[in-house]
Length: 510
Image (cartoon, rainbow, N blue to C red; front, top):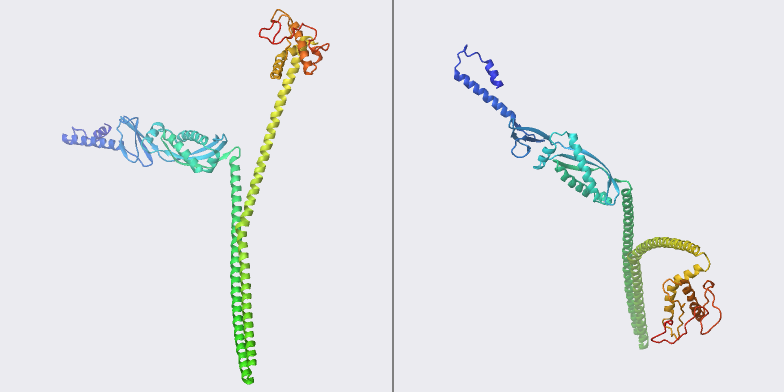
């Protein structure tokens, strides 16, 4: 409407200029169309690639509609729009005092790179929960979520596992954090763990252990390589000596063969010469006897030369065989040294080390058992001492309550009469019994009446039983006067011993 008013203000009064009415109507319509076009163009929103266009109001599809990488028309009066920035931001996480699976406190300073997600469904969560918040506010929410999830992940892992496989730890953290971050519309881009520390120094100890193992393995590898080098040198020396011995043997055999041929040739020539001389002498002397002598001499010399040549050949062969055997013995000794002696030495060292370890373990176990036995015996001794002290205090109070004298002893004996009766019954249960003495106070009343009289009446049978088995009861139980074979001591009148019968008198018991 404001545009129409401006246009009408520039127009001259209709009464002054003769402008056709259709022209005015066409101009007004054109202005209205231009204004509507400009308005529509302004309400058509294009979304950059690094932002999310959030259209809210009457969208017809929930609280908001998100557009990424495109454009949408925003109806005036009914709808409005805003943008969410997709640029990543860094969230520093200074995690301390996180409990691992072994209840060891761990400090894991971490840096997490996150951003608003552009995935369908997740960016709608960002539009609902993050629209209108500043970057600092978003970072604060993300930091709280990351701290909680990292503590939960560390609680399910051992500290050695966290230190050994950091990729797996980061993967678990990334997975746990991503699920929670998507609930508010954020996406985890990267998790960077700067360091892992613990208050108890366990990780440092693991590092020292790994370094010691690496050094020990390196020493073992060096020793193995040195052993391999020495074995190779011994084998090369063995092959060299073997080749030299074989060459020397071949040379000596050749020399012996040449000497043999020379001697055989000389012997042949000598034989021919002798034969020629013999023939010449025979021809000259014409003596058959001389000729036979000459022939015999030639034959003897030829056989002697042949025997000498054969002996030289045998000597050469024996020498060559001896040298070959020496070379074979040295080679076998080198092989046994490399294959048996050196591994045996290594195994012996292993056995010695294992024996030392078992010895130390046995010593530690024995020391622990000894300490446990000492502690147990000490506790038992203390318990026995406490029991004895309590008994002593109880007996003192008991004697004071009885007024001293023999009453306390008698009452204590009465307390143990049941146990004594049981022991006596076990002692005589398999013995042949000829007669039984039954002592009774003679009272007609039962229960607690005449208790003292009945207790005193029980003493004579005890003295009688002790006398029969050769024992002497203590003085506080009274004295038994007189020696009687078949009758008990004076006191409550005993009933006469009678043979066992099915119907005994009332005062006699079997």
